[in-house]
Image (cartoon, rainbow, N blue to C red; front, side, top):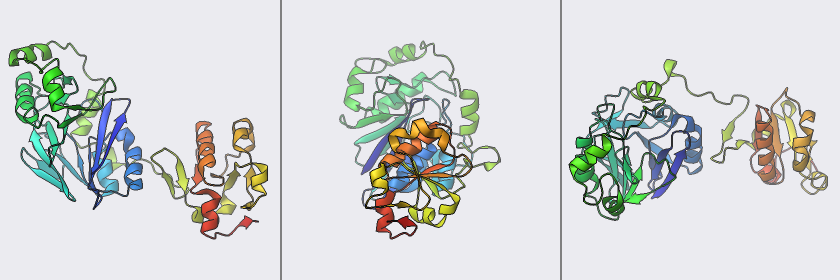
Length: 353
C-alpha cells in the first residue's frame, strides 16, 4: 500500500493518503482546505485515482477541502450518516466497508467528540485513523457539538482498544509533533484512558480540561456541514496565463513545448553561468542571462509586464530562481520542467547552438 501522512501547521491537522499499490486507486482522509493544492500535486505526481474523500467528523478547527477535491478529482465525499452534513455522496455507518483496489477501510462508529465521529480501520487491522476520538496520549474534547465523555469512553474501549495490540494509531491532530502510536501504547500510557483508568476517571479528566473554544468554530462548523463547499460554488483561483502546475515541492512548472510555442510572449530567464549559456546546450532565443547567485541582486532588471519562465540545464537551479522571484513579489512565474536537457530531448526549436 502507498501511504502518506501530511500535516497542516496552522490547525495541527493530519491528512492521510492511502492507495492500492497495484491499481493506484486511493482515498484521502481529513484534507484541509488551505492544503488542497499541496494534496492535489502529490496525488498527481504519484498518479493516483482518488475514489473517496473521507472526513472522520464535522471539524471545528479547520475547513475541509472535501468539496474542492471531489470537484477537481472526480471523487466521492464520504461521511457518517450521523454527521448531519449535506452534499455527502456516500453516507456510511458502523460496519460499512470502502474498497480501493485491493485495499479497503472498515468504518467503526466512534462517537463522543461528536455524534458523527468515525474511525477508519484498514482491512488487515494494522492501521486505524481515529480522527478526534483517540489521540496520541490524549482524546478529543467532549464539551461541544453534542460531545459526551461517557460515550467516548465506550467508543475507545469497544472499538479501538479491541483492535490488535500492534495496530498503528493515526490521529486527526497532534499539537506536539507526535505522528503515530499503537493500541498497546495507548492502552498502557494514555493518561486519560490508559492503564487502570475507570470510566469515572476518564469522565472526570475530560470534564475538567478547561479548554477555550476553537478559534475557527463559527466558520469551520457551518462550512464543514456543507463538506467545505464555498459560497457560489467557487473553486480556488487557477493560474490562467499558461498550463502551470504546482509540484508537491511547491514549485510552479510549465511544459517546455508550450514555452516553445509562446516564446515571443514570455520573459525567459536563464540562470546558468555565462560559460554554460554559450556552451554545448546553447540557450533559448531571446533569453536573458542572470546567473542564479546574482538573481536577488538584479531583480530590478526583470520586467513585470509579462510572464517569466526560468530555465537552466536540468530545471533544478531555475526552480530556486522561480522561488526567489515569487518571494520577491513577481506573480506570473514558472520553471521550465526538465530544463534544457528536456528541451533538447524533445527536439524543440528556438535554440541557438
